[in-house]
Length: 332
Image 1 (cartoon, helix red, strand yellow):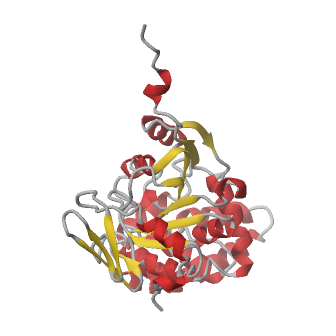
Image 2: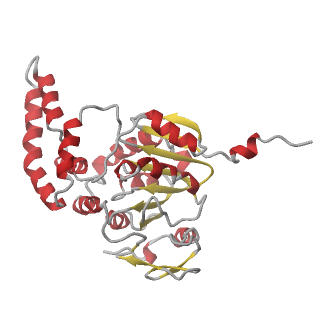
Image 3: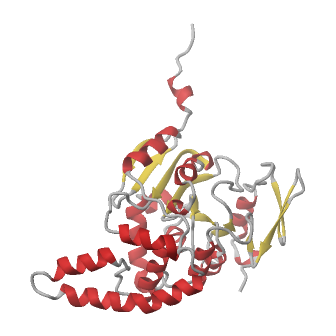
């Protein structure tokens, strides 16, 4: 079912509406029942099935739309809630005290897995996704202090300095320019706010064969790739389990098979298939180092940079005052 405005906490929704800006001319947007209209250039941004759209219907993230429509609640069941909460903490470093009552932007929200965590920790969350997964997030988190938008990280429909904190977990490395995507986010942070990102690690050499296969697999229709993986993943998982129980050579042999034919080894069958599809379906999938991400953050003026628990997870803080203002000396 589409999410309607009366399902959202009214004051929260009103506050978010005040932040909306035209992606064409940056002027304020007026809220309408079916979306937004620009008060300057008159451009309309419709709401489809309860989610305002600021991108074309089809784009390079289409496979993620299929993925999250197919596995709408796989990562939201109660048994996985604690796992998601721990993962969120390791990849953002945010504590409940830092999030409670804050307005937070989730970039690449997917079906709402980490927005679910953030709202349960007391944050008011705005989620954006390039794909139609934004619809799934809106349904999954209906009634919470959460708003979903289908939008492009390179052209977000928000006023500068709108958010107390911003995080992106496992999304920006699926854009055509990860560095550019990271660098576009600090402008939307309030002074003193923090940006946290988690990206695929260039230090992990296990998935070279997977990267080779993906040059072909990402070209397949999402339904065809998914059907193939439904056949391939179960026996590879079973083989891994059997090999690991062989004394002596079992674990090295299992590691070799996993290196040659990488599939996710999560014990949950749906999660295992979901994550394997996530590896092989994207058009773009880059890998990065701490040095790269630190350089990007520093070039944006972020400070207090921190390496978090899971590679490659980094957090930085926007200064309370611009660097030039803090370092200038009075004349006289």
